[in-house]
Image (cartoon, rainbow, N blue to C red; front, side):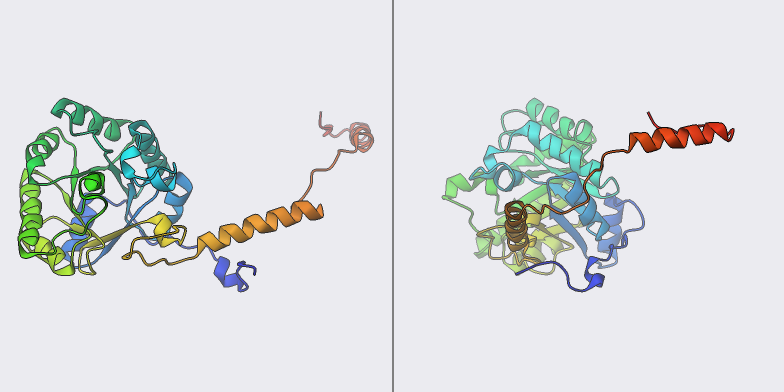
Length: 306
């Protein structure tokens, strides 16, 4: 069955919905007005351009690219050089969006100097606006050091996928009173250390609300209920391209079927010898020469092409 829009209106160009570049001030202003902002993780310039044009404020160059782009089983396989390159690509595609970069596994764990150098690379080579790292309250000294160096940090708390090997897979956080308090403690400590954003993943809604009550910076949620200042998903989950999306990710499209159908159509065109499109034609050199002679005879400059 064809997935092409039957209504011409379905092909309309989306008008820009954001009239000025998105900055941290923008997000703080939206929070102060109790207005939500949209975030998505994506991995290429073309997608970034379309998403920002649609009104998405924040684009994350996520380490989830290790899975959805490179085909690895886990996010910890994300190469830092590739992460920096996709960060730069997203910035080129959507220069007016706020671009956040994920620091890969072990790129900020082994030493402060290594962490500072790698974060600096995301800022200078990747043109990131904010650096995101998975953290708990023990990372406060590192975030303080980065903040004093001029590196804006988004602290990722709650469920932390990079450490899921310890628990045998991703596990929701904050499901007991003690766990709730720990998530809140992490948020408070990391904000006090200088984090400009908090991202909380896979927690009950009341935990996200407790975090929002405890900190003053904007809070981004993923699988954390509806109340956070911003919401984020992996774009492949939103577009229906993931075979087994997380339970909190409701697709807004079915690109998996659309891409499959497009591939089938292409194969059929080739088999039928009708690939479509407009074909190039040979130039009529004799006609070109005749036109040139006529123009020269009339005193006009020749227009023959060589």
